[in-house]
Image (cartoon, rainbow, N blue to C red; front, side, top):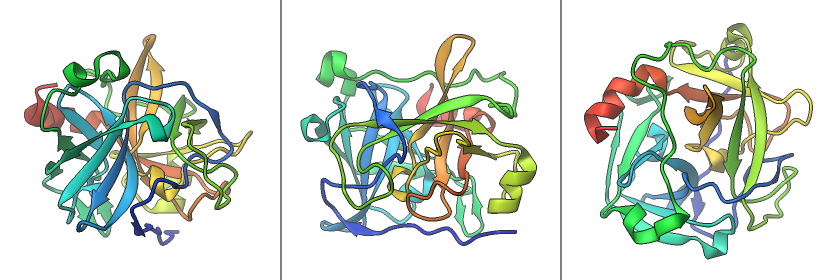
Length: 250
């Protein structure tokens, strides 16, 4: 059974929806808040993860058909983040929006962000090139972060929020999203019901892998905005490691 996935398009603003049923998160040096712009005034809010001093890993649907990316770094308080604008980004060459496939992309920054921001930012580790293709495994716990409102309401906050989910079985993921489980996995929190919202798309799913915080997935699809009822789908990073290396040398 496949559900229609809603994607919000909005005028750029400071206040956005984010992790529901989560909690206040500390500064996460790899976290990036991204506005993908259709033109000077219209765009969609999302997330991304810094993987090098020049590159942000995000969802392909935040890159395809957009012309500018306004990237904010460096604080767990949105108003204290600093903005860098990029005009260079690349969706996976085989990305398709419907059906959603190969939903991964890379934003290239105009200058070395680590030299510019010093201790405020740092890249996150990726799975090694020879890691098992199916990581993260079923029932592994990961965390996701984002800015904005809690509890699924229209009220927003300015502090970074964090939630946790466990990887669900492939049958449930396929039932909800109708996806290829080789390149996607689904996460769900059956206890606290934390989840991502539409405007957290592109953000990371981070797992402690061999004792190292590692970016294992990219938020790709939700069933409805800020819903605690359904799992969310993530692009599995490991199958794209060779492509990521070819674009970024990471």
